[in-house]
Length: 261
Picture 1 (tube, rainbow, N blue to C red):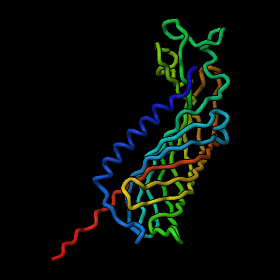
Picture 2 (picture 1 turned 120 degrees about the vertical axis):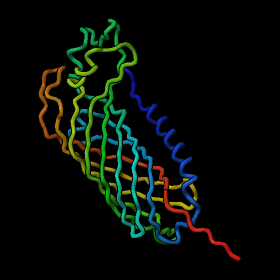
Picture 3 (picture 1 turned 90 degrees about the vertical axis):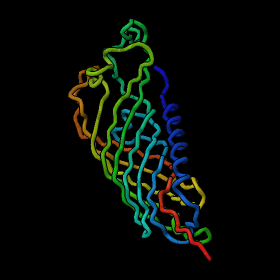
Picture 4 (picture 1 turned 180 degrees about the horizontal axis):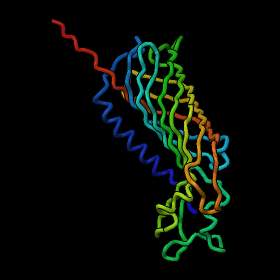
């Protein structure tokens, strides 16, 4: 088995940040956002890592996440929007996984009779609607649009085992047989977040960072696991805690230009 495929995900995140930053330059004007509270719609690209808890820890190890979101910070401090996050790179700890496909030597054989090189990792997705409140920074570094952000999201969560073969085809790990091995589970989740939100007068220097934790009630979506013949029953309690940070691209309107005669 090979290592995880996290590198290409980070490369994709870098490309997304570059593209969105270029768009951001043409859509944001420099202004002193510390003076007064603004209504600020924005797009964010986030990344982070998490540690599984509950039933999830019995199947997967720690992994990474990337995400995209659209939110609005109102003048009042009210914060709302939607987020999509995708987990990758988690190690898999299922003891009987692919047991019925392994040779006596413990090797997986592909369609050409060669020892298969397969990457096995956990994948997941979370889609939430979010509400929260921004408490502006006070004191020496007071900023009406920066401060402590508290929010909670409610939505959908799923996870599965991902197989990536870089050589010849393995028929048993293709559709429709793949469904007998991927352990897909799906349900609903609640996700609280607490962190710092920074909105700067400088272009591109807008970010957030904090602690995110979520809990999910999920149900197995496959009728049977082909490798050991087991039938999974739910519900499961899948949970995680981790650190996350993001680059924020604001879309607030330009200030009007005043001409003096």
